[in-house]
Image (cartoon, rainbow, N blue to C red; front, top):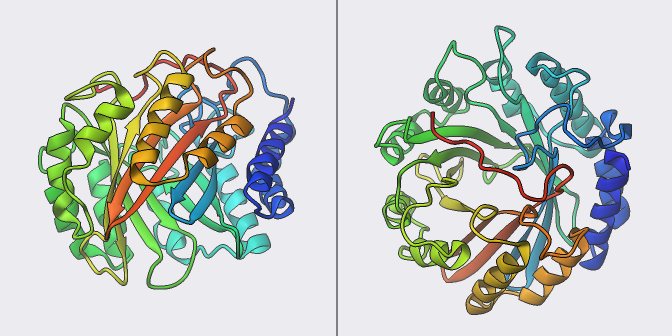
Length: 355
């Protein structure tokens, strides 16, 4: 099986089952997986992607709210050789393809491009691309950049400079307050940009949090006026079966800024890691279904999509579910589940340990 075989067949099933345009989705996936998608999937990754816990370069996710669903695919363009410089070239080519063929807007990306894709001793991933599909309209695109692209600047310094270039210089006050324990414990790990125009186009700063309790992080998320306090601790306990800190695999969160919202975060979202906190994906499924039922969200739709996603019995591994996020804003619940393509390992180990 090639990456293209897997990606297009999975996207077609997920989009088709929700009444979305599967043909359009296939065209987008074909571009996002070009030209490397024609490679056959090996037993081990040539390039250990940052997209999934097992190194797979393709992740699907679904966002559920009352009366609405979105399907997303996240891809890291695999380079022709295992180096960050080659990955930069693959990322650039993919970005240009999305601009030319699907109307993605890369003006803001151009303003910070050389910050996140430096020529001098680059390291780690270069860029990840996401496409978001809805029942109506064209897909939208976003990118995730690497704040720790080399050691010329720290992740915090690079993020601050990027915010300033994009007109969000004062937003750094919120970012630094949110990471007030220091950027070793609250590590800036991704910088996200929507590839769309308009006042609601988002800039996102992502953190990985070490040695923090869900209750403490929940309190910090009140930096966003839209945050509904008190949800996170119980949500973590129900989804992971653990109370208190999640030391095996740390929590991830983001602050989101828009021109319409100014320099105050319009939202704060936490992503709860799942794959190390259950014996199987079947157990995780039941936990998610229970939470969705209590939030009044369509658990049946989630289970149907999961069945289209899984290529094995859910009891035979724990690598499909990677993260879940949930929030209630202005009384409206929303939950997103993230699914690894699990191309290499159905029992992936911990990643991103401190050190």
